[in-house]
Image (cartoon, one colour):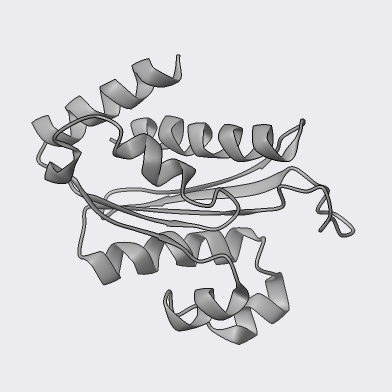
Amino acid sequence: MAQHIVRQIHISLIKNRKSIAVAESCTGGILSGLLTQIGASSQYFILGIVAYSNKAKEIILKIPPSIIKKYGAVSKTTARLMAQNIRRIANVDFGIGITGIAGPKGASPGKPVGTVFVAIDSKKRKICKRFVFKGSRVLIRKKAALKAIELLKKAF
C-alpha cells in the first residue's frame, strides 16, 4: 500500500511539475526517505530537514519561541508554521510539516504518546490534522510519515 501511494505522488508531482520540501521532527527523515525512494525524485524533491529540537525549529524554520512556549513544539500551530515556512524557505509548491511524540516518553496532559500533527501548505490549500497513533516508536514514526503522504495526495 505504501509503495502504491508513494508512486502515485511521484507521478503526480512530475506530471504537474510541482515541487516539495519537508520539515520533519518526530519522523526523523522517514518522510524524506519515502519521497526520494524512486528515481527521478530530484525533479520535485527540493529540501528535507529534520528539525528535531526546539532550537532547530526556531533557528532554521523561524518558528517564534513564543509560539513553541504557548502551544508547544507538538501542536497544530507549530506544524502549520513548519509547513508554511519550509515551503517559503525552499520556494516550492508544497511544504509539509510533521511534529509529534513518538515515545516511549514525552507525553503530557492532552498529548499522549502517538500524538502527531501533520500539515500541508500550498498556495491553494492548507491542511493540518492531529492523529494519535498506537504502537511502538518505530511504528508511530512510520504511520506519521505515511499519513503525510496520504494528506499530500488530498492536497492536489
